[in-house]
Length: 145
Image (cartoon, rainbow, N blue to C red; front, side, top):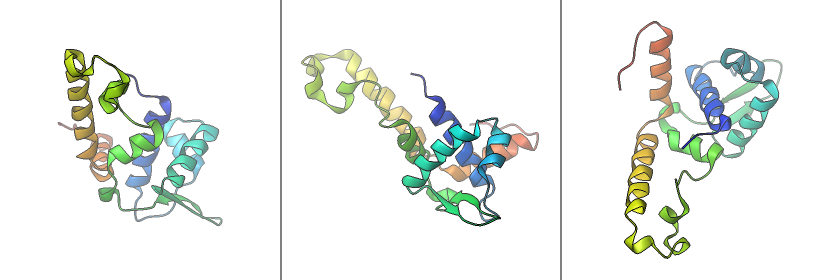
């Protein structure tokens, strides 16, 4: 399974906003420069995040973007599903009627297990924790999971 650049870049942008939470709004250019992402592409991602209620905009000369909620309240699963859509590895995990072999399919059991493991990590990790990991790495430390 390969995540799209939309999800990878969007997650990095959200992490930047989390690192600045409670401070001033960040402008798209600032985030794009820090994360080496195209301004135009980042604008599209932020628009998606804004429409889902994860990010809010602040108007004015010192305006920009901020998280709409405390980073401790934002699960990574919210960001992923906003940017990537459902994270099911195969259709039959969610819709058993999709395949007539579902009741007797050993591989479907693996796909279910994979889906549950992935969702467990994303549901049990919030944006504040991700930002703390990033901050520790930027300070020259290492982070162990």
